[in-house]
Image (cartoon, rainbow, N blue to C red; front, top):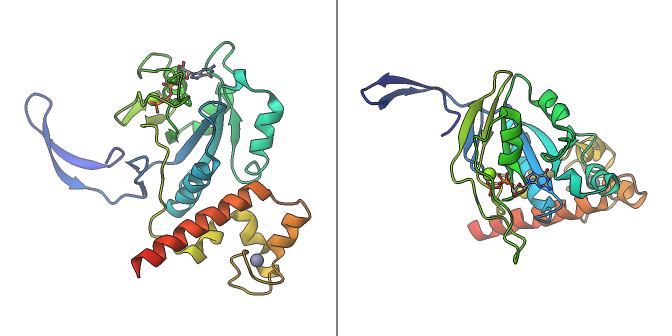
Length: 252
Ligand SMILES: Nc1nc2c(ncn2[C@@H]2O[C@H](COP(=O)(O)OP(=O)(O)OP(=O)(O)O)[C@@H](O)[C@H]2O)c(=O)[nH]1
Ligand SMILES: [Mg+2]
Ligand SMILES: [Zn+2]
């Protein structure tokens, strides 16, 4: 896996043999990387953000003990208010940065700050601008970039390989865009433990194993009704819960 720490015996012509693979501190299947410190989840106005995908990536990060960062790129095309609306549900939990790789390069300094001294991996849908940001960070056109297909408003899957770059103050991995993700090895009733706000409220729910969906006297539902939690993110939580439930039912 890209990110693996190995011992090799060098052979001729830039070939080598892997002799030993060191234990991985974490790994993700999508993107397919190991040993990363933070995952920078990139969204943009176009392609239309799939926030369920974002939420699944965040859960995967927490499972693997990776720090998630939310990055809203192409900020030059969006007003601050629309970006803040998306950030609202995440900003207490993780760094949320708006960026642009064009014109005056909004937010890139802030992003550098978050990435400093770490191995950061970029992830997200095709054409949100992952490779464009990495080119700005490296200060060179190390990765090819490409536009959206005009008709479908979807990405063209320009990046087709995963590569680590060392830029002096840290290391960064570019990855291929994707739009589907399944969370492995998670029981539906475990999902709520990966939502910080829900964990904080659990002790106030009537049942100590409350999954905050159909149980009576659920504090999460009360806070939702009061407008203290994001209803959109909660609805996506229920979607992911149901997906995990279906997967579980398929198994037995
Ligand atoms: N307006 C605007 N366009 C941007 C910005 N960043 C990237 N783009 C454009 O968005 C398109 C996609 O950029 P890429 O960097 O190739 O996107 P990617 O996320 O690496 O895509 P894949 O490799 O397919 O996963 C290109 O046409 C870029 O020029 C930005 O900040 N503002
Ligand atoms: Mg790319
Ligand atoms: Zn509850």
